[in-house]
Length: 330
Image (cartoon, rainbow, N blue to C red; front, side, top):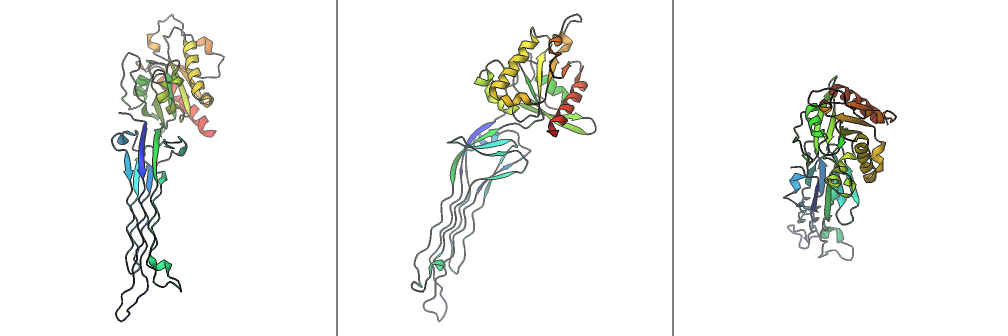
């Protein structure tokens, strides 16, 4: 199951208390203060892990608490600091303050860390409060409480190429042909209910990551269909591949619908390098028009493919690889 949002509570450890203690030495009836300090509370740390791909682990566990620091002891012994708790999340996870929705951090790289809640400082023992006029202080400081926050985790997939198309445009079939991914495939709309990632091998031991995004419909930017829930996953892609069925009654209109939904969601997306892919080319009659002439004036590469017969797939990979390399130069 693909889960791309979760709300959790994080609680850092409290600092340990300082202690009131006095030295007890043989033949020294009134020893000075020797109360130790309390240990620092443990932090709550979020760390990315490239082996994770969803936020499913947070569906059942929603509270994460670090260990509190230990109290100080006599003989100037400080308490042990509390153990940090590390929460592992997929690369591409955004951390927001659940109350304000402000972005606290955007974690992209593997093993990247962020301290989301800091542990409380330990209290000072009475050894720190001795003065010439008060040589036997009978007080110490308590530890400070750790931070407590409610945070929202939001996952945006990181991929080189995002497959964008209307429902049943052949995105899942293409991903299954080009990679080892096994998305659900059927001949009806909204077969894909969650994004799928696949690694596409290219020549000379190279590869790129392709994301199959659930089909968009008009009004997707407002949440119609499955659009709003998954449009966020297109934002991190370097290249966009617009997939439209070759058998569509109006390829140009379908293309404009897709472009418009991306523009209304985030206009920056249309500045990405892109390619128009006409799928299911094997279903066209020999003498039928594929409507490609209307796109001749666009500065957009166009590739006809058939995921069933394999026609055009190698050419498609070549074009996508060039677009990725161009995007990496920017």
